[in-house]
Amino acid sequence: MHQEPASVGGTPLSALDCVEYNSNVENNELVPVALMKHESAKTSAKTLTSTRFPMRADAVLVPHAGWQYSGTLAAQTLRRVALPRWVIIVAPQHRGGGADWAVAPHQTWLLPGKNVEANLPMTEAMIQAVDFFAFDAVPHAQEHSIEVLLPILARLAPETTISAVAMSMSSWDRIRRGAAQLANFLNTLPEKPMLIISSDMNHFANDETTRRVDHLALDAIYRATAEQNPEYALRTIYEQQISMCGIVPAVFVMETLRVMGRLDRVEEVGYMTSADTSGDKSRVVGYAGLIFHSEV
Image (tube, rainbow, N blue to C red; front, side):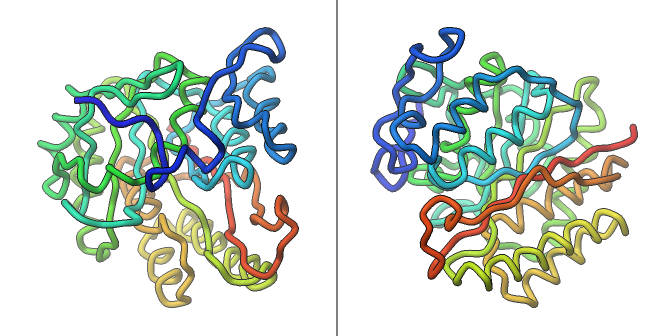
């Protein structure tokens, strides 16, 4: 089954024109033309084509807004890590409908000029292992939080395959149980996938408020990691009413790593808001890039 070409709500990916690829850049390498059409996004293209010195990581958190706003930070974060042959993208559902924890059933995600393949055998095994996972294309039909990352992954690691999960809001009990099942499954594998959390931070407050509450959220993630208590991050962000859209995916991945014995430390690659690009501080979205490492 084929996914429709990447789009956001029926409009071209990231609202940045249809994603074409252009070899008219450094070293004749492919980057999305959309990145080259906005002054604020040119750094993203440079990031994609510059020399990489990737490190091993167990998980990352990357933003999923329009590339002119968060593409540079997403690319900077992903290029810092060694991308394995299989990654699991865990993202929020923005529109709902269908299964609460919907796994994309697509074999191929179509991009103009490049495709990204799913790892269906491992995805099927993952669904068998986690009670709450179910194949369902409906929540993915107009969901941007996975698709917006795929051209970056295709550029950095063209042989990497994906599994994609879109999650609705969930209780700690469901997160805990599902994460334990995924961790037990992953621990049986000789080669572990990387887990990619797709999430923006707080939405639509002014810049000062967004930066303040986002740092509360990030501090909660750092403390939850240090104390081996992912529930603390979930509880803090819910109680503070911080509109971090991917808090459930983030805590699910953190708890999965904890059960696996791999939630050791988290590194911040960067933080910004949409005001850094637009200049408009009245209504912004926050973005963070994080890398989760283990000592194993």
